[in-house]
Image 1 (cartoon, rainbow, N blue to C red):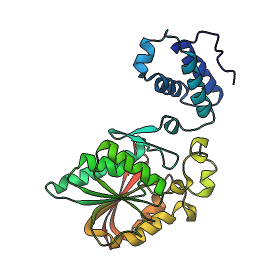
Image 2 (tube, rainbow, N blue to C red; image 1 turned 90 degrees about the vertical axis):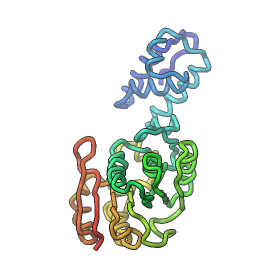
Image 3 (cartoon, rainbow, N blue to C red; image 1 turned 180 degrees about the vertical axis):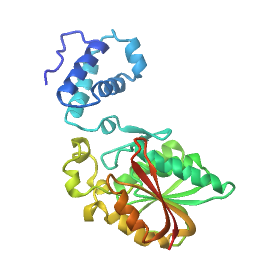
Length: 290
């Protein structure tokens, strides 16, 4: 790394240009945006503020802090982990290496959940989020449908700690439990169950980008049986926890639509898939447990 020299006067614009070129040399696709986000984080400035003050010089201390973050990103550490936060739905969530980074494609789960819950005005439907991670699904639903009674489970105590912090900071009413899928739960009480379960196979993990492979928790990413085991376990057991008129929403892993739909039809009378922002099948909606 040919680092910027302290004796040179580095302005916001010149350091952004340098960082962008450096990221491009490291084959980071979002080079300019990442440089803006990192510098904005150091200076506590928005992107607009950065460019309205483009000729502002950086202090030695700011330059040193920026260099540290640049090196972390050049090592392909996800920008969300460096900044410690990620936007999802209408909220900002704290993230850590104990949790997956929330992704826009998963917002379809919140969108569909709220559509379903609109039909239950005046009621207090009970909702379960399986594998909550940051709590982004459970918390978003709880905030946007405040009459719901929302539970969220995760096998990772470290992930649950982050989820609880997010619920507190966003003032969301969610009950969190440590549980390996349904093991800590009892009764057919949930009107809506949602999950973005692990669905990447070990072989597929080797081929994904280093930001995912080297930094995000494998416990929340991978599933045995070619990425299908967690789907199987949920579908086999969900009938013991879903009300007779309840709905199950599962995020569909890449290239899993056909296999998941065939599996789901063994347990549910009605299956319906919904596309993500790119038009790929991303959500399967299941009703009528057999």
